Each structure stands twice: as structure tokens, then as C-alpha cells.
Length: 411
Image (cartoon, rainbow, N blue to C red; front, side):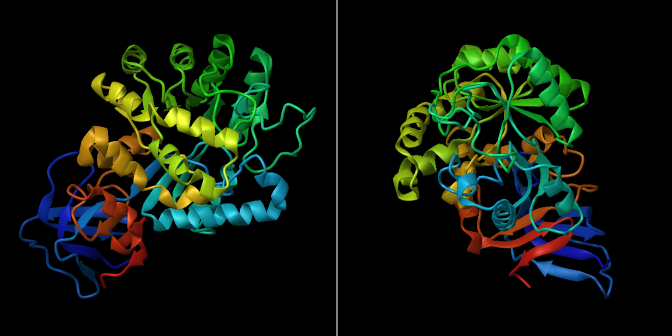
């Protein structure tokens, strides 16, 4: 493969340092080979492709650590009833492609799609971000992943995209975790507290016992992987930390004391601000059920405060959007919202270097440096002064994934 040389770029490398300009980035065989700041001295081969960035900003491909490829309709509890199984797959593939065109070259699916999506993307059979997958989330009876109404006596769905495994007691949860690991999950997702989309619980509910959580975390850790947990309340977060769960998702009610526990236990925290922001503003327009919208507004009120508490306690803060249904195109809003606490550079680092560590891919992606995959974007403008520009697809001039141009409007 011929060399691809990006010239005259303003480089934000994802490590948190000041932008570098003028920068030259050399890509060969899908890998970043060389970075030069100032005058570029290398002789350019005749067959090399040169992309003149004219001072535009080049930064790592974005990473979203909490997406749901398989949740594409407004009411996720009705979604399976409204689609044939084949239609579920087709719609999920469209979400993957759209996510890539938002500038996200790598993502962690936090419950729903199986390892086949990950492998199909690796083989080039489908277009989308590189994926890490949870498979089916684990939920207790009546928990956040139990989509039955109180009037249902049995699950109205078979085993389909997005459904949870309902399991109770140490033996059942242990077996369920082992089964998802057997099926190729990169991590185990646990519904450790109440949620907004589930019809029969409240967000501040604490779900699963400490013993059940410990059994799940043990199985994940024994396989060289980890567990991530959906939870909002301080008690549920504290139980997860005690149980050895590595990644805490949402955490909207988290206080300073609980944040300190996360820091001391070296846990990751992945707030998901976008879903609350978008659903609160557009939920009625999207047709979100009343019970769902009521709870979204409830957890929205303390979301920024929780991130602030984590920031002041030195917690490692990742970046996830958690958008579903019609909100799927808003993933990049997460950086603007995170910047309210972390600042623009902190938000970018959270969605690049930090997230690459959360996905256990920091040896491959997340920063612009020699030896990393050439996953990068070029944007028209300065995201440090205008972080919202990352939401404007017309200003994302280049999207490159593994050295392959997904989009290039410069040349």
C-alpha cells in the first residue's frame, strides 16, 4: 500500500497536550509510521498520496464506550414486537454505519449485539466502528433488563437482539455469565440497579445482591475480562465496587463519598449525559412512553453533579452516549456535555485515550502516535474553541479507519 501523508495539520494527539502545528502524519499499511512537527524532511515517494489539511485539526478517531447498536426504535420494549428478526439485524447494521460516519471508529456495545457483529466488521463484511460487545445483559427478575409488564406472566420475546438474560441467585448468574463468555462476549453487562426504560422499577432501586454481583465479576475476571454495571444509586454503585466490577455506567446519583470509593478501587466511570439531554428535550417528539420520559427527567437533574463529584475525586472518566432510537445520530453531543466539567481537551481525551483503555485497546487506538492504527478524523475548525463542531458532519472532512478512507472531502 502506498504511503498516505497528511500535511499541514493541527494535531490533537489525544494525550492531553497542547495542539501541535504544522504537523505531518505518515500512514503506511494502515498504521501511523511517523509524526513530524515543523518542516517535513522526508522525500515523498512518487506513488504516495498527500492530503493537505490546510491547518485543519487532525485528531484520533472518536470512541464511544456505551452504545446500543440494537436499540433503534423509540420504545425499546416494543421494538422486538414490531420487527421481524431479520429486520432487527438490518436496522442494527444501519446504526453501525451511521455511527462510523459520526466520526466514531471504535465503540463498546453495552448490551444487545453478539460477537458476530464484531467479527463481521473485522472481516470487512459490514461497515461500522470496531466493536467490543457485551452480548446479552444479565438482569434479575423484575430488574432493569426484565422487559415484561407487571401483567405478563412470561417473556413475550424469544432470544432476540437486545434482550437480557433473566437470572437469579448465585448459581444462575454464574452460569449466565459463563454462557455469555462462551458466546464470545468481551465483557459482561450487569443490570445492577433500576432504570428508565424498564416499566416496573425506579432508577434509585438497588438490584442483585452483593453475592450475586461477586459471582458475576469473578467469572468475568477469571476469563481475563471484566464486568460493567448499569446503576444510578449510591448503594448500587457501592455494591458493584465491593464486588469487583470494573466499569460503572451512568451513576447519575453519585455523591463525593461514592466517587472516592471508585477512585480508591481503580474503577472506571462512564457517564452517559447525551441520552438524558436529548430525551428530555425531544422525548415527546420521539414518542417515548410517559413512564420512560418521567424517569429520564428525574436522572437528568443530577447527571452533571455526579460527573463533577467524580472529577473532583480523581476518578477515571470515560465517555459514553447511551443513545437509543431516534437519538442514535447524537452521539458526538457527549463531548460538548462532558466539556462542561472536563473542559474541551478533557472531553476529547475522555473519548479517545481514556476510552481506548476502557475497551482494552490502548495499544491499538485512542492516540495519534507511531505504531497505532491509523484511526483518525480531520475536522474543519478548532474543537478546543468550538467543541460542538464535532456534531456537524459537514465539518468532519476526513474519517480514516485502519488506514482506509471512510470519508475524504479534502482531496
